[in-house]
Image 1 (cartoon, rainbow, N blue to C red):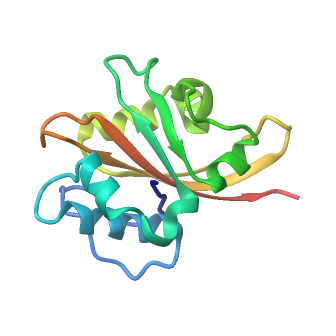
Image 2: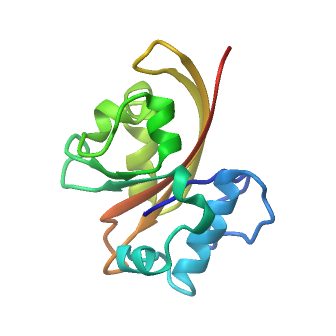
Length: 161
């Protein structure tokens, strides 16, 4: 299973800061940092071995393909599903991740291109017409320390009432 986060920090280097952040995004960033050790990125095997701990309900996992239009959600915790009000697993990111369509796919692919975690906050209207406020982060996984082949997301939300 895979998780989610929320940091407020500068990612100008590949060094992720240690944090006592209470938010999901900050906690997931710390978990990702622990999984990667002294490497730039953890691998998917590291994630599968180490897990996401108490953040299982807040994660989503994206398989990165040659085209950003083919990237797909391959894992999701209940928080992401509940916010979207659909099961995103097996669906392409362009149709699922709120920031992907509103920001021209920049959120996910910018993280992969820069090879740096990227946090995002915003709002979207889900499949049932509910307005959702969210915080998320995209964290990168690489099986060869050169190519990003998965993105681990952390996600928390609040429905606007």
